Amino acid sequence: MKKVYVNEKWCLGCHLCEYYCAFANSGKSSMIKALKDRHVVPRIRIEERAGISFAVSCRHCTDPLCVKSCISGALSVVDGAVFIDSDKCVGCCSCIMACPYGALSHNENGVIQKCELCQKNEFGVPLCVQGCPNKAIVYEER
Image (cartoon, rainbow, N blue to C red):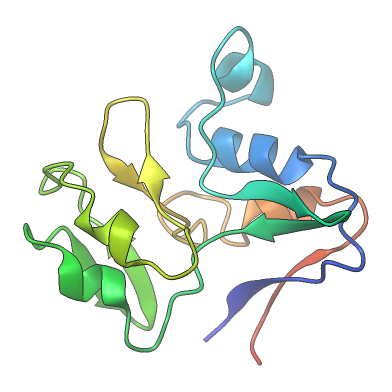
């Protein structure tokens, strides 16, 4: 299964992946309509430690702790990828606490969100990968 991988040696810390991610999951037809005058809530985020920038996103684990910890059954694995049924999410944060990578967060409505590899929208390939100017983010099978 293809997943998103980050090469921190190439990450500039520009945060463009965050904007592309927020746009990809906005349901809007243009990035301007999706992001102008709005608080950006991406499913991927850039962190920096000791001068090294890197992107944090869901790793779609083989045996995901977030799915096991979800008390409402909102998280599930489909074809190796972890997905959220936002209608089932009760916002208890058990998945956030269980994820060893810090890849889950709340959206603006208090529901959990995470990278779903842009499989629920029309882009196919994650937009964070397409938008990375330095090709630090890749979508590949390893």
